[in-house]
Length: 182
Length: 181
Image (cartoon, chains in turn brown, green):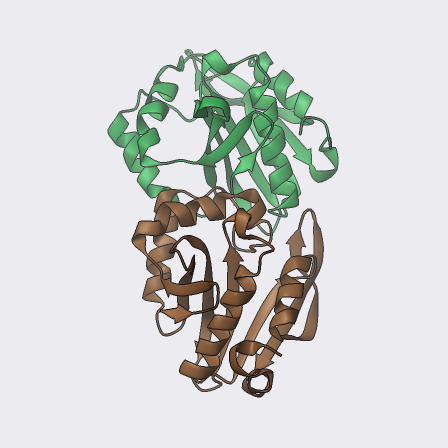
């Protein structure tokens, strides 16, 4: 378990499968999730869960739960590279009532503490749709630096738009001080 | 994600839908102009269940239940298959229970699915095949913005005779925006 200030990151659980499925089927939640398209069945969501668990070592997924134990979203480090000591961060808050209240930010900070502290990574990278203003401001607050723009990389709402690449290095994290507070 | 319209939700097919789908396809008159074109004989619930369990492994196609939001009543199925990524083209199929006809549900489901294909899946062309005698369906497709492309002469057998189909399609620019959603 990884402790944040408002949330904990816990292992994925089969018991949460209907919740996970509800999240990815919610058009508002899935809006910026590049991999989510057609409606998702329980069988498909189960396959995702099994793949996510089997990818241990390359990907590590967690469910974000409140201190009262309510699951509100998922977060992951993916494509963990042991030589480069790098990984890709992905997150979504599936419970819309928990949007805009700092839960995602707290989960990202907790995961970064784990990535740099416990796992000893040197770099955490993430990509996002340029139109996803809420995510952009969250990552900025966490201390991610904008590193690049892939022009026309994403097809979103009928047109091509840009994907942003952000990154954080261990030295950036260390400068932010404990728990990423500047 | 779910595809949602004013009155409908399009969701994934679950094992629990086997009974509904079996009933839906078995109540179709196999010799009628509105029967699913590739349906040959009555199907068992077991066949339907095994088809459902094959769905996660089927790439380049998506099959959904059309459900009324109020009461979550299933009205039928809508599918997209033969997705060709290179050509940005896909085929549409829809089959609704007789009781749900004439309420505009088909138009609503098709409009939302086609918009989803254009805006989310980066498809440019959606096409379909319909028995030339299925006037009700043809009217619905035309209302959605489908354009007649041609006649497939004697491309299927039904009711003891060879019958023609119409080939219809909609391009991204044909979609009537802001019409029914």
